[in-house]
Image (cartoon, rainbow, N blue to C red; front, side, top):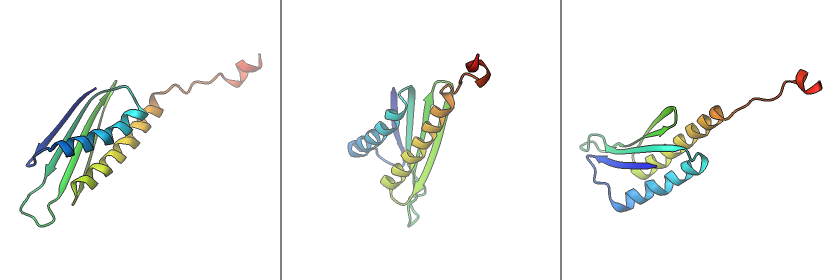
Length: 110
């Protein structure tokens, strides 16, 4: 799995990088066929008082790209909410990919 963590108007510190990696472990625990993950952490308009912190993630799996984004006043809270969304999307994708074929009732009786 290739992991890219970048910042826009923000320096990605080792502590911030480690926090994102530990949160991504939960996602990869549910679905291990992840090809590439790209995380972008941004600060929207740093002159505003609330300083909107935004986190975006693009997760590439076989056959699909999953994109989620989340904004919050606190960057760590934005990352938490982002990983929750990403986890839900990955579980939903995993359920769709799994085969749900069952033998029909007519064939089972014969």
